[in-house]
Figure 1 (cartoon, rainbow, N blue to C red):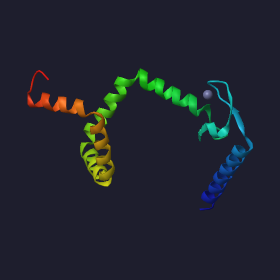
Figure 2 (cartoon, protein in one colour; figure 1 turned 45 degrees about the vertical axis):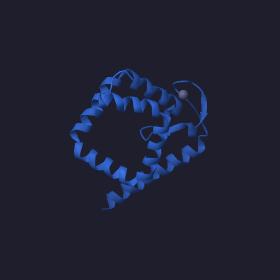
Figure 3 (tube, rainbow, N blue to C red; figure 1 turned 180 degrees about the vertical axis):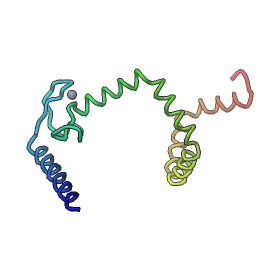
Figure 4 (cartoon, rainbow, N blue to C red; figure 1 turned 30 degrees about the vertical axis):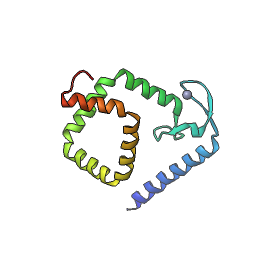
Length: 133
Ligand SMILES: [Zn+2]
């Protein structure tokens, strides 16, 4: 029991030290773009000794966009696979979402219809089998 307490104290002390260091560090240089930026422009990274990521948020966003662009097919396949495996969960979630956001969704649908009226009418006629529109 005492050992656990000591370990807990040690961990909370480490946490306090980390918080203190974050307060002390006001600026940090991004490893990717090399710009000196205030610490709030960096994400929290517990793996780092000072608790702040080495790459700024803007660079991380760019990197993740780049990753998505280059791995789009595999990412989409993963999402599709997940949806297939969690079909019931997804259905329950979207049903409850539609119930909870009914008014908002109806408002958005009206706006969408107003903006795309011609296209929607054309599509509906096509579905009914009318040709030469
Ligand atoms: Zn950067």
